[in-house]
Length: 85
Ligand SMILES: [Zn+2]
Ligand SMILES: [Zn+2]
Ligand SMILES: [Zn+2]
Image (cartoon, rainbow, N blue to C red; front, side, top):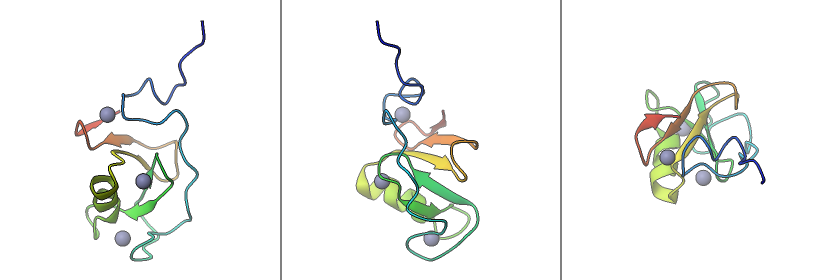
């Protein structure tokens, strides 16, 4: 029997493999600190204490799982469940 990939075991919304980040800055406002990575597509956005572009992307694109950058060493968050993974 195959082992489940570690990412999907975190929550049902996490993709099997985390996408590579699109860059080292928020795609919308060019912020370079406190960035979040979209696990599904690699979108990079700023945190909610800034303009909240990571959250806007997660909700707008339907990609609920984000990782604190640099991923995958920081926290994971699922907007579908509003909890850390
Ligand atoms: Zn989830
Ligand atoms: Zn931003
Ligand atoms: Zn995305």
